[in-house]
Amino acid sequence: MEPGRITRFRYDVLKERVPERGPLSVEGRKVGRVVPIRRLLFAVAAGFLGLASLVHGAHGQDRSLVDRVAAVVGDSVIALSQIQERVFELEAGGVDIPVRGTEEWRQLQRDILDQMIGEQLIVQAAIQDTTISVDDLEVEDMVSEEIDSRIARFGGQETFEQGLSAQGITLPAYRDYLRGQIRRQGLTQQYMAKRSANLASVIVEESEVRGFFEEQRDMIGDRPPTVVFAQIILVPSPSDTAREAALAEATRIRELALEGQDFGELAKEFSQDGSAANGGDLGWFRRGDMVPEFEDAAFGLAINEISEPVESQFGFHVIQVNRRRSGEVRASHILIPVSPTTTDLDGFRQEAGDLMARLEGGEAFEELRSAFGDPESPDTLTVPISQLSDLPPGYAGTLASADAGQILGPVEYEARGETRLAVIKVVDVLTAGPYSLEDPGLRERILQNLQQQKLVDQILDELRAKTYIQIRM
Image (cartoon, rainbow, N blue to C red):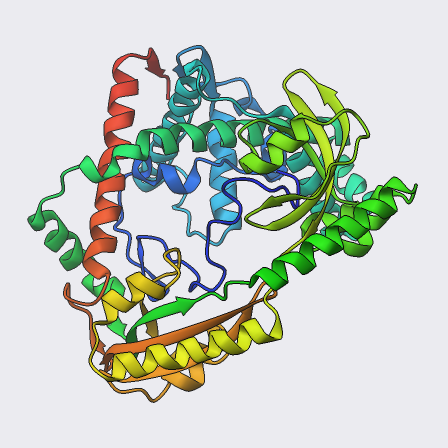
């Protein structure tokens, strides 16, 4: 997706939240049990984007493996050489590989084949699902981004192409390879996201949660000193004065464009979003990709027509449609956000102070958060003391020596150019020691992990039951 696109989904994640950890981690430690590789499908379904899989026989492997078929899955085959490439990827990633020819080696091959069969089943199911599609333009954008990234790592295009040539690969062949891998990744992600909609309905017994925890107790290790806190995030609301100032600025810039100044250059100078560097270019989009106000205006414009300022939740947009094709338009815009004035911010800080006074006076934290807090903000967080510096500036100094029950703040910080204020209640301060299932969030993470494992098993069992599969190794 192009940088700066104003999608429905792009802005719904709070910038100030703690970096998320997956359901298999406890304060940075991996607690996933050693399970058959089929259960790791979520982690590996994206495939490998290295060079190795392009050239069977690379890395010194036996070229006689190239044409040997390890398995047939529906209308596709998996070559033994592809399994060997996966082994190489694991080895290159620092995984200890069993000695070739041993039973452990053969089991690794079987596990990898099982994983690859699962991936192929998912891709084939996604292809058959008419509601799932991968946008060709987005694929091409991602291919270009990946190649640009690799060129940068190699120190230039000439060096990169020399590296490809040394392995018998041309740049067009590598581009085709990436295109196929990215398409498979997109199909897999959409299919699994669709099937995961009912994840909460997957039943996991309490005995399974406890069994998982006991299995992983040694791997989890000890809990570091940790603080648990709830927070109310306050986001300032711009006044009518601020809105009128933004509208006036958008109108002024539109007049400059109508007078003949280059729209792209105006976007670079005035637009206040990620598309500014590209002259406001948002790429191709269909209805449903953008917020309604924006797309209603864009789809109503003639080519090269410049809109009146269009207001959305992000501010005022001045839009120019550059091209059209069936069901899509390509447009540029200039975004002028509605930013709070100095007077607005002063009132905002006073509101935060009043909120703290009400909490200290005994009013219920949850009720005040529901009434005044940003509903998209993370509410209760569990963070090791050593990781407080990962939070927005001001949190670490406020929480490092906090005691349970304290009301702290307000902590003021910037998130993508916008002021935020956090009013904090310390729920608990945990000393170092062994984890238990009562540790905040641990039970929920284990439950989610087990639900994911069961769902993947169910999906693969269902797909295996209706797909022709022949193992030949």
